[in-house]
Length: 111
Length: 113
Image (tube, rainbow over all chains, first blue to last red; front, top):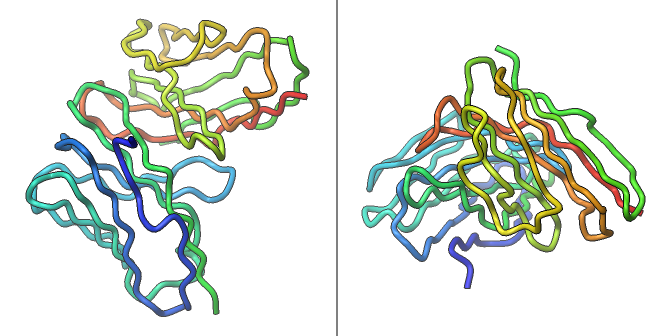
């Protein structure tokens, strides 16, 4: 089974609506990273969470890590076309190991 | 600071050939990791180099190899290319190893015919 599950796989929202993407780990996380990718391009770093209960925001994007450090959510408020892309969560399980990525959530924002 | 750069951006090869991809990390970053991204498997870790030493290796065949130079630049090589090697190859750099944020390059898209 996958170590890191992302849901939903794809999402179509109307411009101005809020949305949430979830990332669930089968093991306790040392750190959780959120990246955004435009199709066929590199990953853009959004946020990194490390402490249980931690919450970070950047512009209209907020990411949270639960107290048990096994689940994270990414919330976008008042979505815009510029938010469209693939959102990937990456897990650091031991602080000294390569990141394990979820399959990604493809977000489309329609006018 | 300039970001992570990768060359070439696009590459077309035929089965059986070999290919070398290059990655220049962010200035001051000493760790370079390589990932393969395909529609079916997603992002998969290939290997990580730190101070010219391979520190971690993913579950890929020996046809995939890499190295890092003293200036932290890294190359990866794939020999005897197979159709299934068609993918986006991403390089990421971080300041150090262990819990440091990785910053990704734009990737090299390899098509094997």
